[in-house]
Length: 249
Image (cartoon, rainbow, N blue to C red; front, top):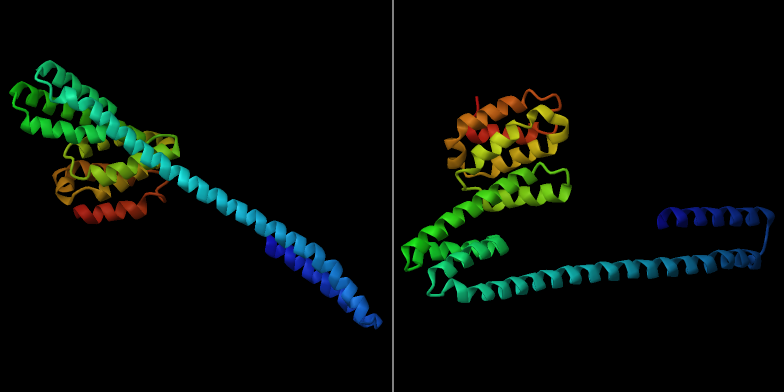
């Protein structure tokens, strides 16, 4: 915007000076015109740079706020974990089981790490079995939630779920069957679900190759269905990568 405004003012100035030269005006006339141009220009530039400085300061402030929010979140999580520790090591097995359920609900990720440790090392076999089952149940709920979210109508939710699946679920053996079952049921509503279909392909492209090969028949069926869609422009690039990975024919 500043470039166009400056060009406009400079062109205007040139025209006025050219007119003066044609009329044979002296240096004072030209100086007068230059002054009438430079004063508002300097005001304009000062305002512009102050505005830019304010914008940059606002962005920096927002970055600091986000960073502080992240730090606060980690502190809150640590405090929440600490509040469960006493119950998790209580001699009463019922209290330990209750704490296991609670921490998985409150902190699905960090809580999962703690419960995984309990499922392997608790001295009470019933608590170990309970922890293992609770962990599986929690993971099942989370898996289903993420799969549904990659088809969400809200962009930020779709992106967040897709990125999490590609980052942390690539070796999950139950993901591909559930993901493809959900996606296949939505291919009939192509227009409403195209973002989710593309996200499904992106997730499949990041899965461990052994995991993909175990589910090659399912993946191939999905590819066949996607290739029948009317609007294939968004999928072809990523679909070709998936075909190459499973040696699709």
